[in-house]
Length: 227
Ligand SMILES: [Ca+2]
Image (spheres, rainbow, N blue to C red):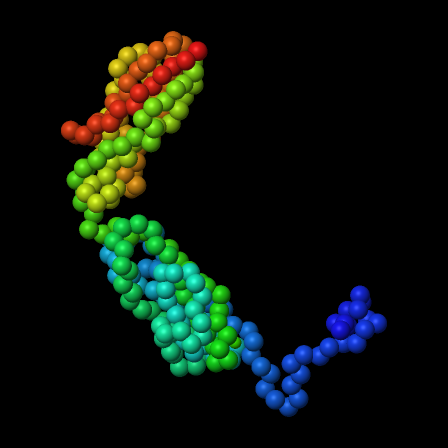
């Protein structure tokens, strides 16, 4: 069967979904969006506010909210019905089960004809019930082999009980000998509990230990300098 285009003009044209005197079928799903907490990047509460909106030429009739990315079926449990409207906007409260970490919330909308929109999504970083007291310090690499004048970045991470990042702590670096230098000597942890240092080798072979301290906590990095 042809489709009437230049390439297929010698073959018959198939006409699909012809409607004579009837309302055309609606096969266009709603266009939509979702926003968490007015676009904030993080929150200290796992109760969030979702701003929902969708438009449809015939009518939006429901929405489905999930932290999973699988598109629901039109008859799935969990759809919230709304009065059919060409423009839907709503604000709802939503409870997340997680208390720490980045999470994404997805929204789908359906219309009168049962078309389901593509997923709209937004993400937010949740940090609740975090212990701000440093309980652990770790280095991204505990063993480093370097050549003369090479430099590597070392990321130190400070966490509290439960693995929450500790922001605003000062991490101090010290070196056992003059084979390497570390810069800076002090660095404040960022919102992810991280402080990044540069370790630079000099022109001498041997071993050095770089120690990173936060209060009484410490972690060591063993550095070998080769020619
Ligand atoms: Ca539609």
